[in-house]
Amino acid sequence: MFFAINMLNNWAFAYNISVPVHIILRSFGSVTTMLAGFIRGKRYSPLQILSVVLLTVGVLISAWADSESKGKSMSVESSASTSDFTTGLAILLLAQVFSAYMGAYTEDTYSEFNASWTENLFYSHLFSLPFYLPFAATLRKQYRTLSKTPPLEVRQYLLNSRQRGGIVAALANHKQLEPLCASAESMPQGTLFLFINAVTQLACISGVNLLSAKSSAVTVTIVLNIRKLVSFILSTLLFGHHLNSKMILGSTMVFGSGALYGWETSWRLPRKNSKAKKSETQSVSQEQK
Image (tube, rainbow, N blue to C red; front, side, top):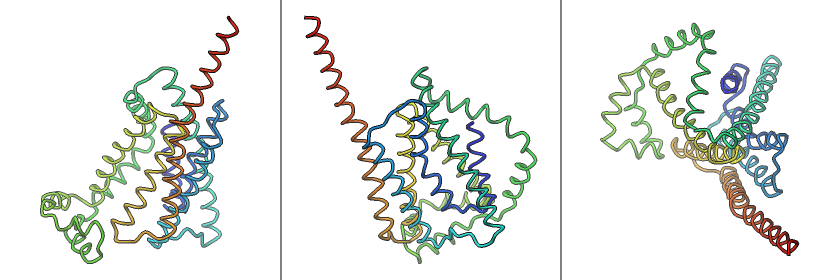
């Protein structure tokens, strides 16, 4: 299932699905995970449901604002593209269903067997490797294509960044980056991006598995949505853009609803359950007397 979810999410790009649309649809992870948990017998308070809905809306607004600030289009221009777009949406929807179920299943597994998150991380990747064998020829071809790309002109990029402004422009003034720039320029651009992507993906999936072992599936998806918002904000600032009113509104909704969910889950509900349990114990004691 882990393999299927990742393949479906990447396969959707072949069907006229833009990055903004991809991000927006995957932002419904908290909602679908909550529905999957409900089907598996879990129950949520009205405040938890409200916070998840508000957080999802906030991420949608932020994704919209982010795509506008970078001039990315989310429109479909032809009938053929419309057909591909519909297929891509169906693929992403299927991936969301699988992801929601896997999140709820993983939560139950950790709860029942007290499994190690590193063990889950290792075996989920190890057992996925054989499924890549049918794609070996395609993977080799793609890697050759990446290895033939020209080197990344890091120094020129940093020089242009000084003119555009932003956080990258500030980093461009640090001479300590010179050795790193030289190493980056010695590698093909595609291979360098592949390496950076692999390292960041390792850090990301390790954090997700660690969080999954210590919290509920819904909490994990909420944290991932907040992380997504932070990515929007960083990408906006790094490339010299400005936070517009939509981004600020979306950010406020996401952080506010995340705080509301945390307060409800970590403070109010535990206190309420503790009081109810204490009251029940006192009632039983009085009946025995």
